[in-house]
Amino acid sequence: MNTPNTSLADEQPRIRRDVVACVVRDGADVCLVRRSALVSHDRGRWHCVTGYLERRTQPSEAMLAELSEELGLTADRVDALRAGQVLRYVDDRVVWVVHTFVARTRQRRFRLNWENDSYAWVRNRSVPHPQVWWLADVCRSVGVDELEGG
Image (cartoon, rainbow, N blue to C red; front, side, top):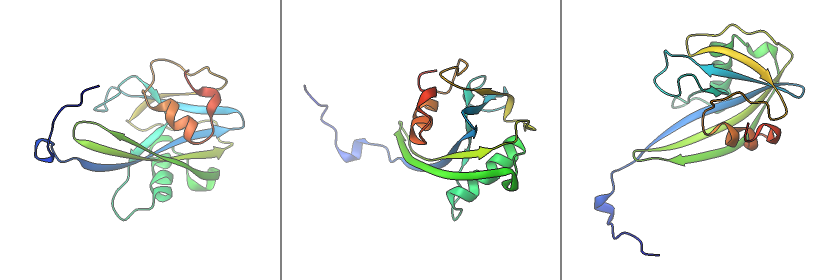
């Protein structure tokens, strides 16, 4: 197989963007959110709770803040928050570093902000479609394999 002959000068520099992503669970049930029409990407697609990680902020702190903002799920209602694997994706301009988490809660009703317009509790491969393409990776990274592939 031939590889293109490129030099480092031909490559555009990539920036690094860190994000957090969390699968919310209650027993075997997983809560997914549907991205609203007001967001800039993945509108109408099902996903987990996500957000940008600002500098000098710990991933777990950022994740708890996103859970509160997007779901109204406050830290005192999170029974456990566990970090999963860190995922990396590269596109034309950005290296995306995704800090994954799973949060356990018994809270079943949420107050959504503008980023999402609906939520659903699902289990056992019953993920609604369409979904964000990297949802299955996030699920696998925190040990929620039964949702893989939707």
